[in-house]
Image (tube, rainbow over all chains, first blue to last red; front, side, top):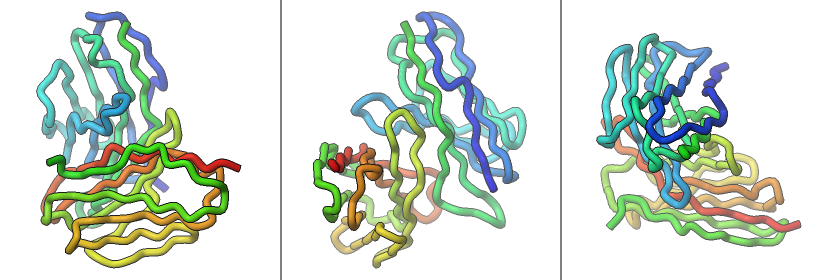
Length: 115
Length: 111
């Protein structure tokens, strides 16, 4: 069965510090991968999605970036965090190719507080 | 007009009640509809997935899609305190790469 991991689970970082959040998927190959942010009262905001290694689409211009160095690894980064970057960051995957599906499956999330 | 509208709640019901959760949408291209359940401080969990119009039942849960009215519903029968969570609807069209989510409805089921 498929499993999606995210770490760290919680993070407290000062303004201006860098950020690196990691997401890995097990039990599937060639997935679509997604990064979302969920802020209180604002719903799920899609930040980035990737259909393959090195292929990243950005949905919202901001000081965050994403990379996909391996098939089942997705990284969210920032060089300098802002207070407004605080939130609950969720990684998700969906099947692609022969097992293509529309539904997405979410990881446990990373709660980021920028102080 | 937002693409997907969902009442944020909270919706408070007693244990055993039938719960109706709803979303309306504006994009007639949406064909695939999903419901997610999210417990506090956890990632969303896929509950139901339906394609086009009609009903789909899974245990105590029934998902209903009315494309002519651009309206989808999730019914929960015999609600339990463990059903207390935020319920998110999501949808996408054929050929779209991404899902469009509602903001979620918070459900509270009291014993």
